[in-house]
Length: 247
Image (cartoon, rainbow, N blue to C red; front, side):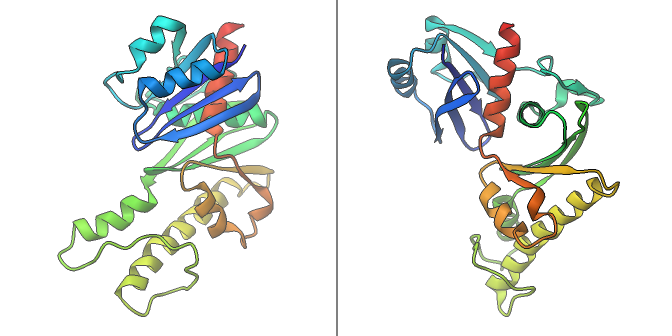
């Protein structure tokens, strides 16, 4: 039977329908309503759901869903093939854990570096044996642009530009764009190189709302052949956790 997978993030809520390992349908929402959930349930014969959330308060549609089917809440105990060595597992972001679960589920015999480009950029590494020790968190693309305006009196708000391709800027707007976008590019390359130093083959898995943008930043790098763009990686990790929970 199909399963409903919901990931409630800081900016978006992602909902998807899976039939075993196959992603049937997925949508992104800024505000998921009970009526939308009903539409999912009407169109697909869903008998269970899994929810992962970074928010402390329940959403209005959650009790409605709980009345209709069994609902599993993803937590740090549902490691699904991952040995979690994070020193404070209760503080680990569920989206980060779901990402490495998804990576190890899709590529179980490879070392995987998961780079999630969302509100923040997270870097998480899981080895071929399923050992996860943690990673890094840094400001996301839009956060960096907005911070330059917020914390200064003169710098304007600048939006990302995928076509920008220069080492430096020749005015304030392009200088900001160079600092933010080139800064992220060099950060990405630095983290990837630090995990690839031992010569072992490494999957670089991009996910999150800015995954396509990061893919374009890295397209001409020496790591391009090892990059896999998996925009639904977290949802796939939650689906894998659901299957394991029901075994």
